[in-house]
Image (cartoon, rainbow, N blue to C red; front, side, top):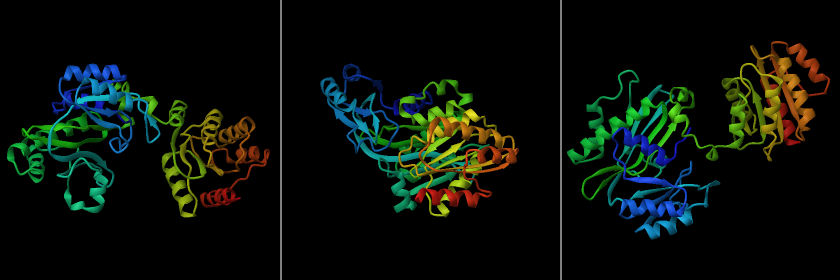
Length: 377
């Protein structure tokens, strides 16, 4: 779950991380009023869940409240990477002497939080990591012990030559880690962390991504979810107990279990196909779930075939088969479907599918190859 910049900055401020004063505005008039309250030149920043806002014209300077009104009117309503801007952050401008990057992510390989820092902030950290990885300092953090202040100071001294500024950065890093850990984040990032001409240190931008699995512990954070920014099909899937992620291919995948889903998509790619989605119907699937699953997948205009790869343990294969029958009757799909059902009640399932002459397969390799073959026809 992604947070908007203004929401992330509110959290940062609670932890003592210095952020410039600012507020969210949904109208040009509100932007003007906030700028007037700040009483200094401001930045008008589009609030959408995508990067590249500045390059798209979604971040601009305003010298006064009149300009804030005018610029907010330009930004509100514009689209950035397909997302409509419905609110802006009006925040005080800062004179920047230097920009750095500080971020914390979960590293799957080490199974630990990893702190990343670079003296080159304000740009895409991915580009730096790819072209000049030696400019990024990394520190794995023991999830039990947490980060020690001397480690944070060591990172600060690698980024800044001035000991006073390095100390301020170290303290900010300590608090950033608290934000990351205490709120079940998968990402907490400051880009850029700036030093001003007065040697003040500010978090000019803030990015937080929350782990959905941890939201049960944070009902206050769950309320910050902006459904307008999220994929409507993913929202519908979640409401029906499904896990759905849209992808760029043309072969729809319906599976049960995230591990099987990943293995299936890997096999599709291995044999030259391209998955259109990740869709997990879960551990105990009713026929109704299958109908919803197909309904969501069939919205994809590039779709050329659909494969079902179900390993029935708790999931009953005959429930899946009945769902396929109901879905094909209701939705009348125009793309071919091939099914592999193995496990609980698979014999019953095969008889059900024989009744509608649905193509079946006995193995993962077979169902994937058939789906790719059908997509080419």
